Length: 624
Ligand code: G6P
Image (cartoon, rainbow, N blue to C red; front, side):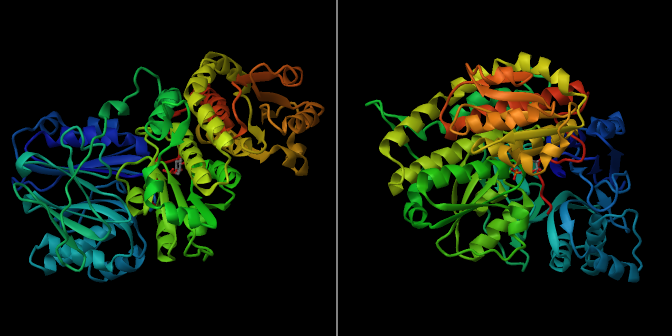
């Protein structure tokens, strides 16, 4: 999804902006641009390109790229098309018709058509199909009316705009000044030493290599950023807001590939480590050999969580699949009724939310627009909102009443991997702690589950050792046009996640189903061309899964089975078998999802596809 970077200071601005745009590439985009203002009466220096940031970089002449020691303001943007096709004309930044104002924008201005008509009546013309250019010219209109007061013009325009935005606006007449604003789309301002430099980002990624002092703008806030001055923050009604400067500590080395050919495979291999980090200080092995689960988020809201009669999990994509596993964990260990909702459906459905309900919002990025809106709805109706988020300081983390970070580090590959296992781990810890507090989980089962959970990172390592074998067997499947993934119980959401991974990055159509549902439709698709992945680990439904497998075998389907180490029965039925170590049924997804991720990865690589940035997808979906 779109990315924003901005700079104010006297270092080589073009280089800083381009580096920042590269760091934001993981969000997914289809065009990019930067604009610079050196204030030498030369107007804005604007560069845009379709496609990759590298194309933009190639379009910038050396004298601009390496211009140093000149006070300059600059903004850059990676665009993911919403209004109008990916093109140079539609790429940001957008300059107003007068040439006085320029801006970049993340989000969507919903009433842009109406505003555009009004502006056209006043003689404004447009170069692009975007809602952003409309906002730019609206600001320009007020800018001309208010004697070139940019701050006032931005506030007046935003009071007219309906929708979501993070914007950074510059004016030609003052090259040491920018205005930023946000509503439902994040924006961060980094403060350099002595206010001599400022760095702006749609997240902290392009900022942290320069400064750790940041301001996260809140909704409907406008920041007036002027070189050598303290940042001023205003609300849209023009009242002054408090400026809250925070310290962020994001490890930028975690954003590099660490010797792997793609971020996705690095992130798959990161998982044993990530899960250890996720459990650190939370799953505690006591001196007497027993285990405890310590979650401060739960401590602070214990009474409310224990009182909950009903839990609603809201999420999108992979996080929604983690939610389906969370439902089984919480229902099994806590005996509380749990519903799992697509955030996009929940927010528009007038759902029944009671005061004592708990809404768990799961999100890797912490910025997904639909999940954020679902939280707001839940809060309005008095529910406690518990966030399970990776993005530290993200909008969802800040909007939730309480919650737990999954602490798996930045996830760059668009197809989510380590965030999924991190989310499932946190949900397991939550169910364990809550079940124990409620008395719905026996001490024996609590201890056994904790003990097994502690072994998961090492067992993940064992699964990952089969990477080479999975790579080889993946070669048999690149021909496929359709795939079926089947699982039962805790492995049913893993089947959904396996199918999602494959379609996201290999563009092969894939569907996940509960294995027993196969005979109610999908079995009609089975023939010798159709690969079917069975999640057939050793648990109480094992023999039923074998029957499902035989139904496929007799129709000549090509079976790839994920089985428990040492399984002898299934190797006679399935053409390909991948083993995972034995664990408790409730923890199986943490192991069985790894072959799903590796299979999708290798098939996509063999098909020569861009696994880290698949077509049409965005890492962080900040529009609904
Ligand atoms: C996008 C990503 C998915 C992700 C989903 C939800 O579609 O490509 O990988 O699962 O958004 O994102 P979230 O950040 O809320 O988990």
